[in-house]
Length: 204
Ligand code: 3PG
Image (cartoon, rainbow, N blue to C red; front, side, top):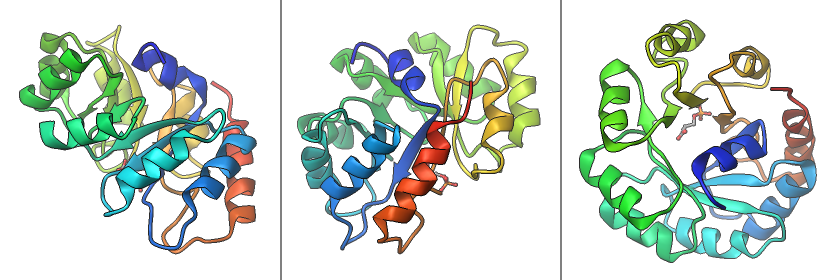
């Protein structure tokens, strides 16, 4: 996987996955890939997350990245586990510089103009807009896209099946992220597959 833009353009929706105990990581990855969502963000919020990244990376067609990467230590662990891209809810200079130096495709979070400017200073111009709905929703993104015309976004946070198409209709949006595909407690892969097939059909 060459760069973060390629990852962002692979599918309209990136499932944000919190790997609770009892979810079979391989079955989940296979379900999502088969449904047409090959880009998977595994949040480093559960003790088994790194093991899940290792297991899911072996699934044919899966492009597995780590989310909730908050610092350089977590970055190193995520890369060692085989993460093909890295997502963070925010952007610090330390994490940004380390991610760039590692060469891994990197999608840091921004929520305002100052965040974007700090990212641009580091040479970054592809960002997660987080928390998308709470930080002002589509109106905020439209406003930010004005002064930062070359910047592209993956809005994430509060996005649901019925709001995806509004976000994707904006030219600065390459994809969206969301956890609605696998809500907390979900164990039914048929239901996950159904939601994922719908999500894979969204047009950009
Ligand atoms: C994330 O880490 O990106 C968010 O938890 C995803 O937001 P959502 O749960 O509102 O989709």
